[in-house]
Image (tube, rainbow, N blue to C red; front, top):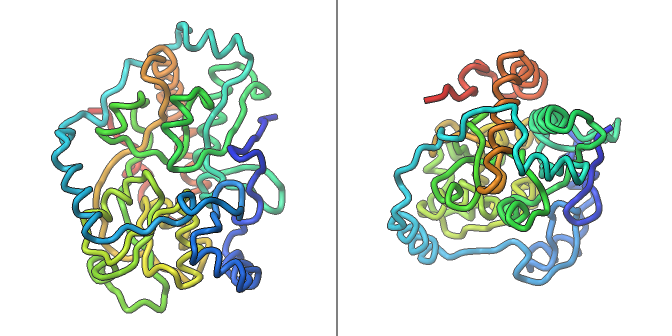
Length: 340
């Protein structure tokens, strides 16, 4: 049985309730919680609502600062890199894998806030989703025993930090491969193609991404590809949160006008909450990968071997059909990245 731990020591059980969750949230939010959210004194992160310092709450960035940051990013010289490149797959145990086996557990960083990707089923209490199936498959293949796989919740903004500090061995958490991230951590071969989409309330008159974002208060998870994209957009304010699902809560409370996130996550949020919709149009096509230490070359090779077997053996397709097909409504083959 897989062990589950949370980055904040308490597992999130209250925000993953499927289509009926929106009504429950609206009923549960008190005027005090609304005021705390507005002031930034309440963080709706991986461990549920908690008081925090102002720096930890939703962060608002004025338009001028966004554009300055975006300009600096464009000048960073990281526009050219091969997002598909990784070490060759191998079933051999090198020093990194042997060290993990010696401590008798593989710690996998996951998400507990993404319906159909990684969340806790309120009826069964089990953590489940597309990324969870993959995390368990990788852990079991490497360790040879599912009891030695530990699932640990990691906030979006802390994914790289958790790897570099050794708090997790790998991250399986809808993590896009980017040139900047490749400078900080190693990635497996890609396992899912993605792009950035925008969600708005159903009451919004916006029909396109540009209409939804121009002059709007927009939300994204801190450290995400969506945050980087919104810095290049003429939004009035950019609000960043620890986990992308917090954007959905802020949108339900009327605190933000739109949310940008990965297309798969956008579809899952629309499935969770019937009061929001995904707009046509997408930007920043990319790929998701599994992240780990740059020095753990043999671990990367083992993960790549498991990914190859997971796909060719049909497990990837079965997981897609179970968790994502009802919401993405397109061909699974479109989402499996073909090696270049």
